[in-house]
Length: 84
Image (cartoon, rainbow, N blue to C red; front, side, top):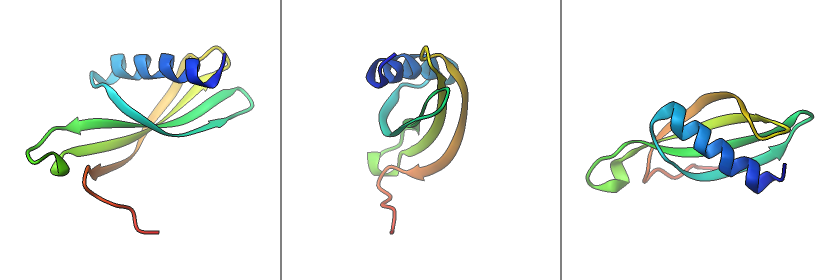
């Protein structure tokens, strides 16, 4: 399965598990068994929106695009900028 198709399918599966709609994919990499991706999800909506709580989930997909594992790796305010 191609990366874009696999990621769309994974986003649907993650949404079903979390009950929240993924907003974007911030990283994608092939693995020996499929794909791994970092997906950004709105966890808590606040006003103003820059204070909303976001989370990064690392998802692991098999070669058919099935979600086989996920974990939350980070929580942050939407307006937060990473310092390099």
